[in-house]
Amino acid sequence: MHRYVTDFILDIVQNSFEADSNNVELVLREDDRYLDMTVRDDGKGMSHQMLEKVLDPYQTDGIKHIKRKVGLGLPFLVQATRSAGGSFDIQSEVSKGTVVKCRFDLCNIDTPPMGDIPSTLLALVSHPAAKGVEIERSLSTSKGSDSYHLSREKLLEVLGSFTTVATLNLLMEYLQSQEEALDRFKVDHIPVL
Image 1: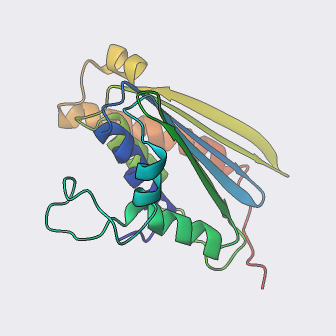
Image 2 (image 1 turned 45 degrees about the vertical axis):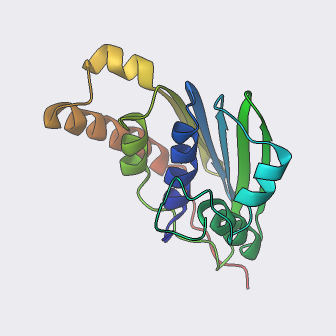
Image 3 (image 1 turned 90 degrees about the vertical axis):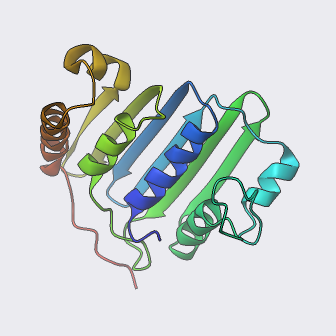
């Protein structure tokens, strides 16, 4: 179930991994009012007919979740963004890849809480199916702006691998420090009723 925005991020990027992508780019841009998320991959992509099916909550290919009769990841994201005053768009081309873009209105009372960004990014860059992963995270508000960039390839060059607890703890500390550096520019999101 998707309780947090980060649950949607994990779900969409995992879809990219499962589409045999060699390169996945995640962009998270937050300002005073909105969070814009873009996930771009170079995976197997989808035809127009397949796109219609993945957006239908009552359709599934029966491969990803064998016992489940419905596919809910993308339909939940569409519903969550639209019911919270945001937006959703998906573009895909067979053998070229897929781009998912969505916007959450952080001042809408129906927008889910953000969730744990450092833990989410740790799960993505250390995921066993991940190949090339690039992450851009930025915050630009009335208090100022800052950003950071993560490259799975560069992190592996420095850390060696993501197979030990010590390495994962070190990576988590780094991710938390990057997010904490953005804290000074965060603003309270007061719901607009």
